[in-house]
Image 1: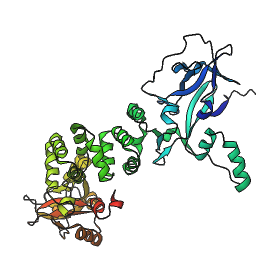
Image 2 (image 1 turned 180 degrees about the horizontal axis):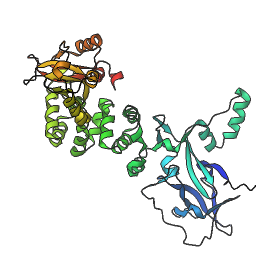
Image 3 (image 1 turned 30 degrees about the vertical axis):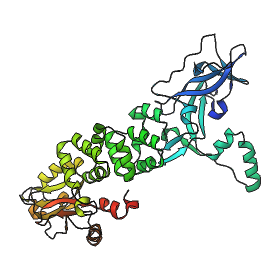
Image 4 (image 1 turned 90 degrees about the vertical axis):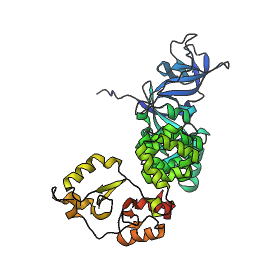
Length: 420
């Protein structure tokens, strides 16, 4: 039975670079200087070769489909003078050597910044696909021409085989500023990383790549990532944005995080951003900015669930269903009278298991734990440890509820290395 399987060969970019390019008569035309790949595909196909002409002219392009491998290098089929195209990189294309080799990329599977030592390509008939990025020491040895001697030496001395360290292209995000900003949002794999991991990655980058990565995110993901980032880096990222873009992102942050960030910005920049923000959000943030950062008033958020006692469980659930996405804390429902005086609290678990027609006044727990606006961080931490709550309400001297403190916000103050 005939075997119709296509022959498949793995190649490395380092082995292709510098290969001779010939015409059909065997006359040298130049050498391969780079490859162009279309990154809209899961495994990008190579579309063109960049040729450095023999006589020192500017680099030019030729379709990869016209390239055939021979023992001396590659032959351009049916080549005629003038066949070389002018260099042009489409929106969804990358120059592999220029954009990837020796550059930083993000391994989105391992959420780490890595350095590219080589690229592995798969040849199927006359089509070449980018399949892996080599981030290992073996890649460096290969490029130096020392791969085989190194293998022999390590095997003889230590009975050790130097492993490959490949990352599938599916988990690779280029970080070259121009290339990152040019890629469409569907190709931005950074958006799939947890915000806390993405914050770690941003903190590991230099200022230029840091800005490029941040600008490549949509405003919701940018806000989530900013909340997890070191305050000094938060400031540097926002300072480089215009007021409209900065306000759009800060509006997506939790109120307490937004207030902390604006409090760290230069006064003129902060005031400009507040003017661009939606008025109701800006007013809430301004209220938080009036309190010292390490007191209860500075740690709280004013985005929480508050209801009058007459509201039924069903009415409360309907409201949560509509508004939960824009509320910082939904673990507890705080019950207050018409003057905002705190009467009781209902846990979300109790609400979900209650009769839908029962009023919150019959569900609420009246033995309350709260802190005053001027309570300091150590006393607040003691309350969290003693009572095991995830949020604590903040009240003024007349027992009017002003906000709630989320445990994570406290953690960022008492143990910043854990909170961010």
